Amino acid sequence: MNRPRADLRRRWKALLVAGLLFVVTGCGASEEEEVVFVFAASSLTDAFSELVETYQRDHPDISLELNLGGSTSLREQILDGADADVFAAASFEVLHELEADGLVYESPQMFARNSLAIAVPSGNPGSIRSLADFERSELELGMCAQIVPCGEAAAAAFEIANLVPVPDTHEPSVRALLSKVADGELDGGVVYESDLVGGLASVERIPIDESVNTVRAYPIVMILGSSESEPSVNTIGFVSYVLSAEGQAVLARHGFLPVS
Image (cartoon, rainbow, N blue to C red; front, side, top):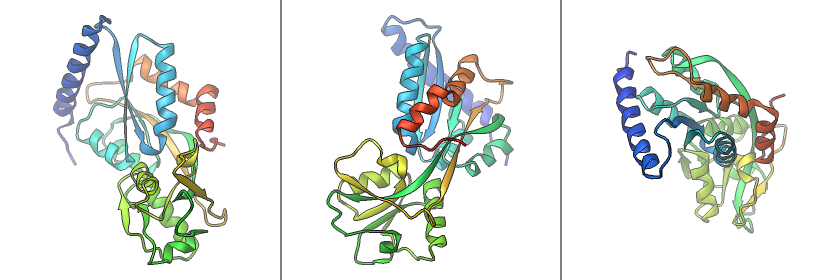
């Protein structure tokens, strides 16, 4: 499919950079400051917030702008012309259309892995013990929509377990699902292990048996505009930082599994 990406990306970037330069100039910073746009799956919210903050602190000459959301939604934004330099997704499959459109620089690299767990409100009012409880129609239950990676992973786990869940909602991102559990709107939801690290007081973790759990691989890529032949030095630098031992330690603290 032929999309008018060049004009869209130029327009989007012009608006964003113009706005950012207005703010930066008002603060007395240099107009030469480079902006690197980082798109990241919602399950990476806490980890990438720390990665961006740390990298920017060590590189004060650039500004890293973090855009978080469901991997599928972020992909569509990029295809529709949103300016992105880095895309950290929760699934390799999400990247296929970007690769087909020639927007990906070099091959995607796996930078983390993640597995599933069940989130329940504090006190576990629904007495949920395993995935089998997601067949109980009297409970208010949630999953991610199957078009996003956390939904695909949950569906695969239920298939392996030979279970037919009866969810009351399919959320567009794992953080949207976790929020509903934390607010007590749901008795339980299937989320990522990493979402339950850091201790939300209003949420408890119920493990999923390893025999049916699924592990997702997370890829990171550099995105090219239609007029670009290679990414900027700072774009390459940030991706290298994510893949470095220091970056991997940040991801591990936030509950992600190592690459190997």
